[in-house]
Image 1: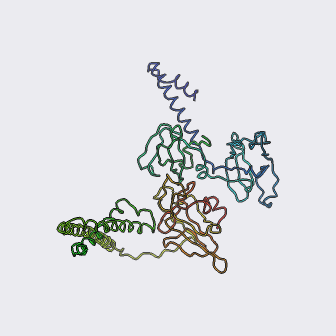
Image 2 (image 1 turned 30 degrees about the horizontal axis):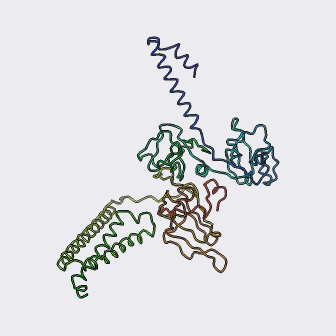
Amino acid sequence: MSILCAFSLDSGFSYLPTQTVLKIFITACIYLSMVNIDYAQNKEMNMGFYSPDFINIDKLYFYDVPNRQKISGQETPIDSLTFGKDQYNNYALLSAPTWFQPIHDKLDYAIFYLKLKRLGRDYFEVIVNETTGKTAYVSRESGQAILWPEFLLNIHSVEFISDTQKVFDNPNIKSAGRSYDRPFFRSRYIEGDWMEVEILDDDFKVIGRGWIRWKENGKLLINYNLLS
Amino acid sequence: MKNFFKPARIAFYFLMLIAFFILGLFYAGIINAGKNQGLAGGVIVLGYGVLFSGIAFLASFFIAHKVKHKFIVRLNWVLVIVVLIIYGIIHYRYLNREKTKENEKTNTESIKQPSTSIPKLEPTAMLTQIETTITNEENQMGLGFFKPNFFNNSTLYFYGEVNPEKGLTGHIPTDSLVTARDQYGDFTSTYAPPWLWPEFMKLEYGIMYFKINTLGREFIKVEANSKNGQEVYLNRDEGEVLFWPETILFPI
């Protein structure tokens, strides 16, 4: 973007005063950067999350693409995670592959999520490295798939990704929209792309109720907070 | 005691009863007491009528005892006028409704039929899917299905509107489905509401699927009648939530 801006400064607007050109340039750069931020947050959704049953299993095995010729359970794992407890008796990850980078690792709060890419009868395909997008398969019996509606009902709160988003009286954008200053929302019900919420203030006290749109055309319209 | 059973007083007791019964029904209508209550809606509205008339009937004895005979006669006339006005309103609304129905019928009948014969159409594929316009945005397919667990809970409770201030225990069910086992060990229903029409049912195996429209922590809103779209709330602990991907992977 800086190259683009430099080019526009050198080549055009020679008939305008330098200060005006600079104002236009700075405004354009700010506007473009805001669009970029929105685009980055407004990313494609996965199916939900996978949470291994680390309370009952010590090892979580990762598999390569499952061989459909083999009977389920006879696959050879490519790597594994080892769960245990630390000196404070909290759950902890004792060993993991070097490439392992989950989306949420808060085992001391009993929270451990991997992004769920695909749901199968015997295996789930999960994202094991958030930076590279590397995926691996895990056995269905090793944990639980938590799809978005279920996930949103069980987290602490959600927030809007943009200041232009509004709270509605009904799950319908035709109803009157209300604006709040940086609100938090606690989900009560999920209905399609809509979520009935309690509107929370900075101290997480309920100040109202309404409906917000949490996704649209497969894109997430909210940021979520697992903990307060 | 003699005064107690004078014709004007007896008429007063009954007029109070009738007038306040109708007023109770009207009041229930104004506050939407029967709305979204399923079958219980009618009973709730009737309850208001009975409550109002009962109180008025009892009060009429005290009023009759305290006031003069002349005043009771005047009150009777007032009550008669009130009852007649209410009857007039109800009758007028009934006539209007009938007129609208007749107009609709006439409009339907007056649509001209095509003069040329309709060509006979042959299907070109074994299975065709007709695309319909989604009116209620993207919520036509719901989130998935709710499968009640009749093995653990023989009764499935239906709830009307949910009060967000109260938890599950603060709500009283409006209706229920009661199941039992027959001599072969198969499930059978001993009581079911007449409007119950789930998306899929094989009750003898204890299988019943309701389309989930809204998912909550304690309650879920399901389509209790897949023909007319009637919705009820269910306790989500009384069964299993199956999202669409799960339902497709593990069909019934």
